[in-house]
Image 1 (cartoon, rainbow, N blue to C red):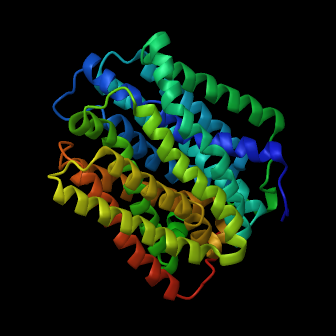
Image 2: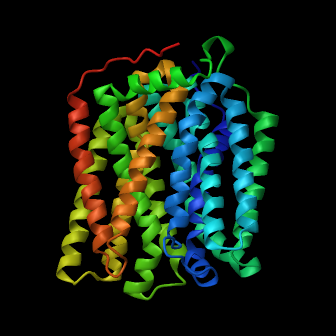
Length: 403
């Protein structure tokens, strides 16, 4: 197992990992415009371009991990990019909101390849706190994308309308595929591969989910991701309806992304001293407390706290999420080193499914006040904190894969 990865490899992993964030954040400034150009149907609205993109990821994540275990990380990653390109072309040709959402679902299926295979590549080379440290530095690099993506999306719209954003997705995916084929070596030797088999996948999935500690951490991860997804999918409409803000979204999202980036950078330096479990506990408390403060502020102000307070608490919540993202996956994978591919797949797909339902449930309460967002942060933080404490009390039991 390697002890270090070169800077160029870290940058490549960061770009692959950030394709998911780029696919969400660059589209944020366009949601209101798309809503005007492609009117909402009875069952679909612009925010579904975010939440159902994640639903597509759930589907892709079910297969990306087992495929990467069977055919290697590199090939699984490449075919994920191919599917992502196909979904992007569907979006560019979409004549209606329904077809645009369908293309986004296909994009989500495809982006699971880079997301899962990259994580498995890192797990092939690192474990435990060392992996948490690499993941944190990875997040601190890739967070540059969410910081600039909304502004980039707004700039692209000025040049070529909202379809220009999808042309940028197309260029990014093709560029990453070229770099993958040219520079990235395979990290999974043939003697460690697990043949693709539905029976084996089902059996190994049950083994993973039957591990009490891992299952609790997966649910906690889903709730944390759900808090972020809820904010990203609803905040544009909340800012427009509550505060009348429609043009400053890139700057606000850059501040939020900066909170995650700073947290990831600090986490990467602190994890060696404090351990991932202690830092994750601090992140859960931070998310719970900021959610509680925002909920109280919303109650006092009839759902419209001062914009400075709203943004400040939002940055605090995203800082806490940044701490958690740097540690939760590493903590869950501790007992799953012999099946990193399918383990990454199960963790990602189940947590994404939980996040999708969580976000859709919160969205049902509307965007006329900040209260749904506040309650979403509070609920996700408090429940995941309890689950993490239960996981901490469970003993480590390595999961042996069914071969």
